[in-house]
Image (cartoon, rainbow, N blue to C red; front, side, top):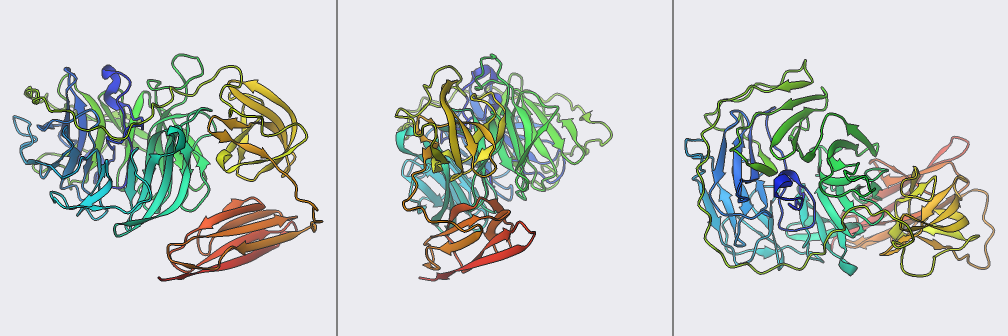
Length: 601
């Protein structure tokens, strides 16, 4: 399994079936694996009419549903092994369960019988299978642990932090996306690359008041949903690249997941608020989106209302969407076709956190559902006979409360809007009229708008180091302090906010004296060190004037467009050639290269 999303049931038990809001580490993943449309077995957390949670499995070929009779909580975490042979899930007492086969799940009693509960010498709040499926990664109060299933002994994963807000794992060797506590109760998202049980930090995506979802691709690309004072959104972070926003407008992300090949990200999120007060919050109807990771463009998919969870098939051809409290839909992006799936859920059961297993041809001995018709956009699958209702499971015995994990800050209620400058950094304004300003590292992807308001249209996003002339201001609007500025690069005039409660987004540029006379055209491409020991990093810098455009990256890979004065922190594991492709105004193209030699310690 390669995905990680964190779910919190915070919208009331009536609608808790598909809320996917990150904020608790002991939460569950929604990841799909199936061999053909409408076949395979999906596990999910279900909540009955008495608000009792349990783990269920459903065979999509027949629609039959079975139950696992081990007590779990609403924060239970569940995930199939990569080969679909075992299901691991956290239980009420800090242990974890293993469903080793589907024996008994789909018979008359509909109770899975091949289940064991394992009590490791540490408290488990979340878990992930290793890429090979021979070990489990456990999130505990002592940090990340790794051990084979049912093993008593374990090793601690080598990290420079504790991923107390959740983690995602993908790739072989694995990449790990870690959500950890930062200063001021914020959440820091970072990407690591694994070598055995040791992980080296590749990049830090950023620090935010709260996260709503996270996932990582096989190549180390990462995606997160964020809750921010200036408006909920999310970021796509290419491996060793600059993060960019998923949307140019506010979107309250419930769930997201990479396509298996990493080309797209399926996203479920809300873009309009039910109360009409300008605040997006849990309970607003979610919709479906696709984000193209190469073009960095977001596409809105019509036809889904109240969407809450989304997963890709392993071949990347289908998407499973959970809508409302108990509806399953299958979407074929190539054919733009939606098919409603028939799953025989027990009465009054609501669905949380689905996770698919890649079971060849569906569950053993059960018929498979025919592939959806291609002629009709909204085709309805064949209805199946009503399943005998599941027997009432007696309530579990009272168990003493387990020790609490590190306290988690309460997420902001949504995307606040109002009057005044209450959301600006509580200090003096960082600039004044007439100053030259630049975007700080804290302000990466700063939104450049055509008016001083969150509701004003966005012209583009400004990267760290982007310079501008301050023309007028400040203006207080919707809680932020705004300035009218003119960009140095293209003379465009617009508005930017200068800060949030965590720090400044822009700062005054103090010129050095004496200021050297710059030539009309120059390109400098340097590295702080050209030889590093494996595990060390170096900074590659460039300065360019009088050229048309620049592109930077690894030789032989995809190059990204960059600004004329910028740098990148690179941590290569092998000797690597970095390229700066210079496009001159006369059409000529010049390649500058730097080789970083990596010495094996």
